[in-house]
Amino acid sequence: MKTLLTVSNLSVQLQQKAILDAIDLTLAQGDILGLVGPSGCGKTTLLNTIAGFVEHSCGQIQLAEQVIASEQYAMPAEQRRIGMIFQDYALFPHLTVAQNIAFGISHLPKKEQQQRIEQLLTLLQLSEYPKRYPYQLSGGQQQRVAIARALAPQPKLLLLDEPFSNIDARLRNELMLELRSLLKQLKMTAIFVTHNKDEVFTFADKIAVMDQGKLLQAGTPSDVFQQPDSWQVADFLQIGSWLPLDYHQQQWRSALGPIDDNSIVSLNSDNGHSDAQHYLLVKPKAIVVIPDAQANAKISYVSITGQGYHYLLSSINKDPLLVFEHLSFYSEQQYQQGQELALAIIPHQYQIFTR
Ligand SMILES: Nc1ncnc2c1ncn2[C@@H]1O[C@H](COP(=O)(O)OP(=O)(O)OP(=O)(O)O)[C@@H](O)[C@H]1O
Figure (tube, rainbow, N blue to C red):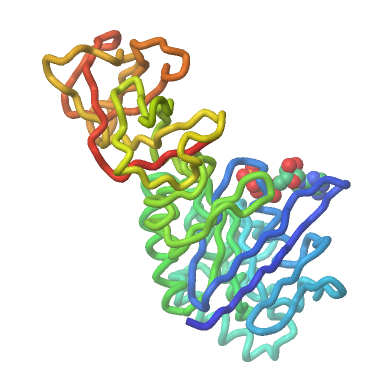
């Protein structure tokens, strides 16, 4: 597919502090990218830099084969043909729905403006409300006005900063699917910021995980979830919990038994050669209870979820190299807090990380 956006080696410094560090990112025409990462890692700054609201210190941004930022040049934001939707929608409270949508296209002849407003009102199911003010609309309707306003100048790229965070949880899924199908219909390329990994699965084609100003990993959501390439990515996406391992006499051991060397997909490890602590990434479904065996873990916390009981486990073995806390385990079976269990890890393609 045709590449629409290429960000190369992009760095940003604000008040002498590195906020973005050598970001590389490409996006194909029509792709929707979910940008995730811990609070303060630079997601909003990356959107603002692509949009031209924040000055970059080095690197290049190319949009639809046109360089919009380089070492020598920064195209003004209003010329970049990038639409932005802010978390609080930032609608003009004193303007009606139609006037809000018209805001970015006032340079067009009146007739063309009117045509575009009508098309967008229909597309976003706002035809009944052109004369209403933002305060007379629900959160979901306000979001649709913000989308219509951003789409009116026919941008090449749409940037959305936490677009669903103000939407009622029950409505969120419906709105996400609606907006996704609209963007797909328009073949619109988009980047959205979220804190919620479930939103990435519903809304995005690609995910990019950031931490401390760096882009750690990008790919399809299922690839990144199955093959996180660093512990930070696995940890942020809460793919599993961490079981400490020790490499001793050519064998990996854990508080839940030995780990077969032959099944290790040693992604971020050095096969026990360094002094760093090694951890097995344990997905909740990879743990099983072994009846009548000697207990090796104790239930420290119980909660009820949609997927059965959720238990946090701590090790009974207090060997400092192997001791664990907060190992996550789901089961249909009800156990009591404080109960001791014999657990084992189901053989699978083990992923070991150092941290
Ligand atoms: N104008 C500024 N001057 C100095 N530092 C700034 C400025 N704007 C943002 N920062 C800093 O840049 C870092 C990244 O901020 P940014 O808002 O991009 O993070 P974020 O990942 O979007 O966070 P959140 O998820 O909490 O919204 C933070 O440490 C922030 O304090």
